[in-house]
Amino acid sequence: MVASNIIPTLKSSSQISRVAVESLRKTRVSRNLPISLGLRSYNIIAKAGGSRFSNCNSNHTYKHQQIRMRSTGENFVGVKYPQATPAVIEETRDNVFQMFSLKGKVASISGSSGGIGYEVAKAFAQAGADIAMWYNSNPPEEKADYIRSKYGVKVQTYKVSVDDYKDVDKNIAQQIKDFGKIDIFVANAGVIWTGAPSILDEDNNDNWDRVMKVNIDGVYNCAKAVGRHFRERGSGNLIMTGSMSGSIVNVPDTMAAYCVSKAAVVHFAKSLALEWAGFARVNSVSPGYVKGDMTKVKEKEGIENWGPLTPVGRMCDPRELVGAYLYLASDASTFTTGADIPVDGGYTVQ
Image (tube, rainbow, N blue to C red):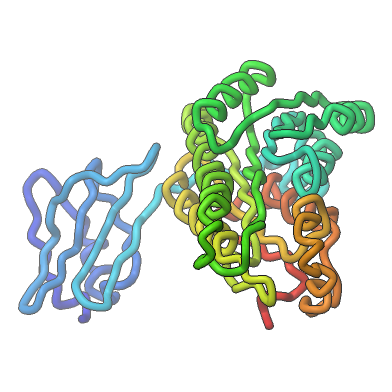
């Protein structure tokens, strides 16, 4: 349907400029229109035999004015968002090293007692960030001491059960008290599937519940608690650890619960990127097969075969992931939100 068929009906309380109307007449309904309609949002409702602008209830996100414009059939006009504050200050715009610096920022990282989380904590500290290290069962005190002495940043550890919202919320509040703020949160805590290959086995229910509670509920709990802080401050950066398993099915070791949980995490990040666009960026990193504590529990099932299944012919060292996390955490990525960065040795392009 061509937009020239649309004849706007305007109420006296709201006027649309002649320029905007002419722009509408020259474009298809499916294109965004540079028009501002004041404090309310509007729908473009296209119907056979004529169309009209109709007043509808406001649909705002935090510090947002959304203009939702829809038509019937295949045509859709998306949301118009206000211009964001310039992301990179002028002094750092032309200095790539300063853009990647985290000096003066506070990063809180769940699941950072080992593996990916610990390597990310070290990388962020090296970039200048103060670090809140989360753990569940293995206190990382020696690792925290190493980071503190090596990079000269503030580091504190917190025992948190991510599947318990009250515990998460309490610890987020404590970290804000200890550090004064949280700029970056990495939702990294997760567990791998350790049950039998088929979900039809009766003893899999507990394993399924455990994977979902930690990998999905845990990320939700962290996002909700820290998101309220981001909204209050007007800025924030949430990075979730997804997995290539969120977009493929692992073979030969089938892990339905893990694949489902990581697909949820990746899409949750995309959903929050839109929901929080007015005050925070949200992205995810999806690693491939990574050497570390989590994969040790699968050694008996022959993870030596995982490397050859990857196009580069080997598994990933967790240190090979930190560049993606640092990019997303820094001012180098201020125009990046809703993205999932695969770091999988080419696995998902097969």
